[in-house]
Length: 229
Image (cartoon, rainbow, N blue to C red):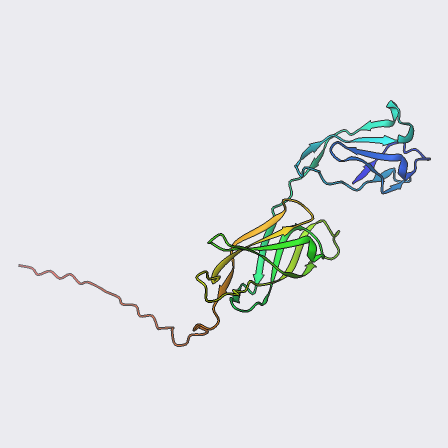
């Protein structure tokens, strides 16, 4: 955040400027530019994650703060609602049920990370069965952005495996997926029937030939005749 001051104090140092966020406390200036009369601050996240307007106050020479050292802003600052995280794609979206493969899940509108311990992926079946999947890698798509800013990430996960194929419970069919950011409570993306597990030993239709037929159009006409008596 950039804050511009009129009559910028010539002796002001970076640690003498504090910006007060009501829910997060005071934030020291990260940089200042006396020639431009500018102070720069890192905006803290809302502890409760709620969007809305907040009233900010600027403290100068805060070590000996007096009434004249506190400045209010002409307008409030607004925290915008965070966009809902979404699973953009799963490739491949089908996997054999008796052997694991690696699928890549791309998620948008989620805080970035490259730490596999900060993300979790949950597989969910229609019979209420759930299983945590193994994450083998996490990549940030936009590497020029701040690590924890909202962005798009890609996760490599090992697909589920039916370890007991002869029991009555089959893992075949559609599987829903939920991707969770473990460093930020309550942030997750979910897609129904995101992955399909199939039995690779059963016959599978690969291609088809000769299924296109020419189209025939029939024009039906009627003729009316009349006879004079």
